[in-house]
Image (cartoon, rainbow, N blue to C red; front, side, top):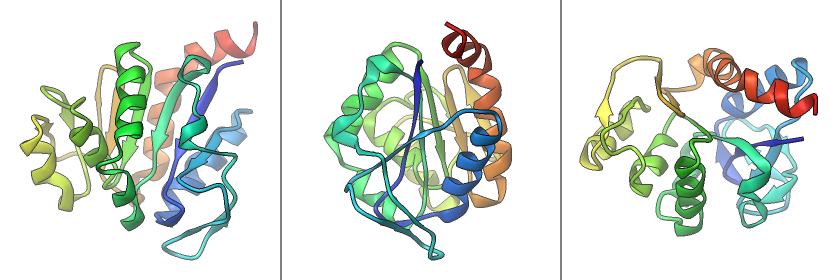
Length: 177
């Protein structure tokens, strides 16, 4: 069975951007693998508490069909993280789904995988996307091949639905083998 990872900062992740996709996928019968920078209780900006399953150092790209990146002010811990950048390059090179919401598309931009790609981001990250070669689109959710970006917590459900639609056929094949 192929995995879908959901990456969030240990402190100050955006609660809705983690909870809504987790709940949405669970209703579809799919458990996302919760990944953080520390394997200890994580706390969201609005007080949500959750324990990650693994740290990002434990991600096994060959076992996954995609990765979802949660936003929030704590996400900055990943902006310059070369291990995360390397993981994202491996996913992108194999055209696996890379989904990113709120400020987290800045991670994709800094990793260099948004060059020439359409993307959106929380407004604070717009200049960073453009500076790193992305084509900024002022929309709630933007899909460019295997990369899905969304601009914030208000569109967390639409984001989760879009991610699901993009991986539905892959999930169906993986979960029935």
